[in-house]
Image (tube, rainbow, N blue to C red):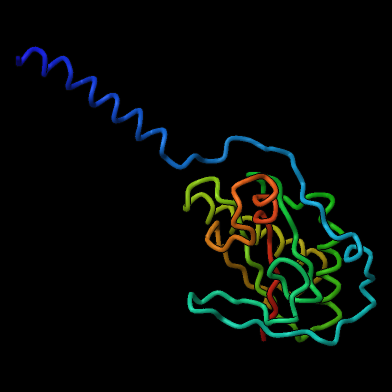
Length: 188
């Protein structure tokens, strides 16, 4: 009887390990290369059209700034700013997002009293730790872009939300593409 137990025990341990490893959260493994379709009408707004309805952000129960009501342009970004989107497992500003970054820089240069918090977001793939680090890199990339465009770095704060505040709760590429973004939230 002891010989049978010694034979089955390693098989049981291996089976449990294989089953558990299949349930673990997977980290990013590559770029899917899909981009989100953006509202082209917002892309064509000129930066000379100044929005006089700039709203302040409010802080929610978790200490995260949220834009106020009608002051949202897209995603969770305060108007007149525009969010930017990222490729899977990337934190570099995509070429198709540069016009949005230039627009955001111009808004800040035109309104020297505005302060903005850049919130880096990720999709649900990857560990919590990985996504917090990636969200921070995304927020830093946007901050650096604004600073290179002449914005005072003292007017910009960054925070990583990782995967914790998805815009779209879906579990597919369309949802993930919306969640890989930086939001720009105005505060005073």
